[in-house]
Image (cartoon, rainbow, N blue to C red; front, side, top):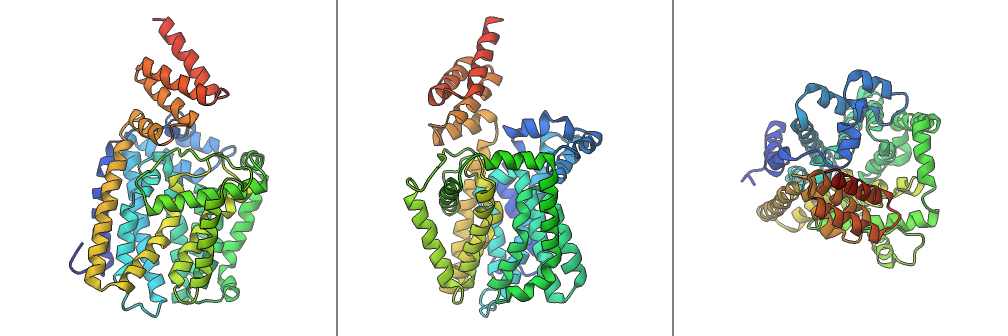
Length: 450
């Protein structure tokens, strides 16, 4: 950490570039993984601009696929995809700095909190829970959406401060539209604007006037989703997965798991073994945890609004959407990408209020060192499919899909005995897993043909 923390945008960007470079240099050697093959490598819709245009009428997430097509047609290979992901992460870290700066300016302790924004941005740049959104190429759906989501927020905040109609009524809804074109989970954006106003002492009723373009975009986006065959089929499949009670139980369990992953990121897992819940009987502790944080959020609104803002932001991003559109995979670490920065903001503000500047920097330096080390180590797991799924089997030993994926990676590497072992284990755990049965038959056919 520098003796004197940077104050200019240029120096801030240099420190963020240094942090991202140190944490993610070894990510550049990673390969395509898992969904990367179906979404990018084996998907002709992103291999040419003609393919991308043809896919517009039937596919989803057109602007995400635009970024994949851009990388593919540049011919830079997998390293080009990784470099783009790192650039997106660096840009997001800078946006986090600007948003933290804007939040601090609204607090009466702002003179005492001048160091906080850069500390928050550095923690965001280095936190290992974000590796799934940065190192895993398909994680770009989350990080790229977050870029336009955060840019839209910053445009709104700066437009309110500068009384700029161009930013409030032009750039803000434009960024929201782009975020929706990357990933539909950006629908929470108008509610996030309201939350910001309320956390910074504003009145939500007065805030609705400059926010009406974003709400209009939300309504129009909802209509597009409802009348799009691709999105409608996706929503119908999601709605059939579980009951409302089961969805609530799943989201409480997911919220507890993901908050723990952010606070203690030493057991990161690309495919966590979280059982599907149908009622509240098995989630007593997650429900107690959620209700305790909800009570803390309510209690802190007046005295420590940064804590309330962080908790309300996490609840907004993690819970409501998936109550309506549940997921087969209850939680993934990359869901914390957009969620985590206000948690870091609250942590850094508390550290600064409880410690003097030197001690705050020392504590932040220790945290950054620990987080950066964990990020570098986690990136090594993405160096090959075998290494990634071997790591995942250790953490999710009772999940059939994980064993099947490891077996498939072994099969591609012609490590047939190990592949057969994993496919057999997958079928023992879940006899209905047809992919494991198919892969086992395919493996036997290949061996018999030799």
